[in-house]
View 1 (cartoon, rainbow, N blue to C red):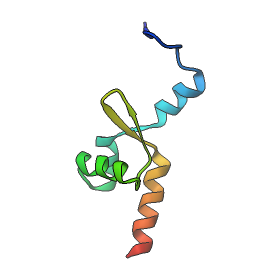
View 2: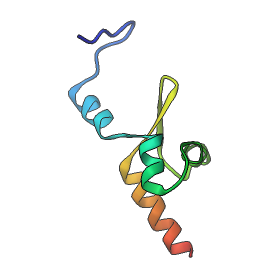
View 3: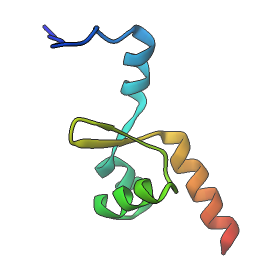
Length: 74
């Protein structure tokens, strides 16, 4: 059972959104980079990331956009 302290439980839409996010380790594996480099890309604005607690999560669409931008710059 989930407990939400000091906040409303998430809506179904919010739950679906979180379920589709990737961890920095998952994003790193897809990009061929380290989790630390993925966090740097989030902080620089090159990847769209969301921080939940102490962890960062990446939107899959952001990875595709980043890869396309990198391919165009070559």
